[in-house]
Length: 267
Image (cartoon, rainbow, N blue to C red; front, side):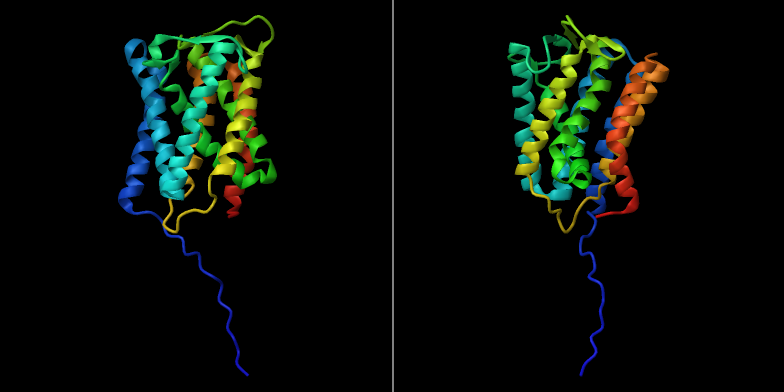
């Protein structure tokens, strides 16, 4: 009779190379530094930083997708998020649904059918981290968590961009709390379109990470920074405590279960 010794199965996933990690950290760091500079700038410099922040942020999330999940995930994610962002914005501009009636300012750069080319990259930038968080904590309700996550994100984004003149709304009825320049229909539009985008991504994208995989620290930093920057900038730079409160409360509520799960170390 033999005695078998049990040894727990080791996690065979290894971290990415130092060069890949440096590239990921650098890309995300540049995006964050650009956001830090935003309240300190004006005029043409502010316009350039606004556009650059989106591209660098989207680049950081795409690079994380590639290094964490592989090429199939990364290209599928971009192949869905970018066209989705463009088409939902085109639908909104031409019909007023699902967001309401609005138009973009030429200051956001080149446009295709009145949609600035940078705008779909903003959708891609936030879709990947929200999907990662939703898959970790939401179970069968990934689409719902994701929809509320994107809606909460826009509570900070829209007032900032409207104030800067990047787009304008036609407000004829109820408006977002503390934001009379943005109609309430926009929040419902983001909820609806966010649920659709996250549902499509969840169905289309693989869940298995690469054996040599980037960690989720990049996602943690991006989401926590988004919350922190939205609250602090509105409190101390834009003098809009109401927006700081409602964004901090809603996005914080979305973020809390994910951060708690990460703190517990649940796989």
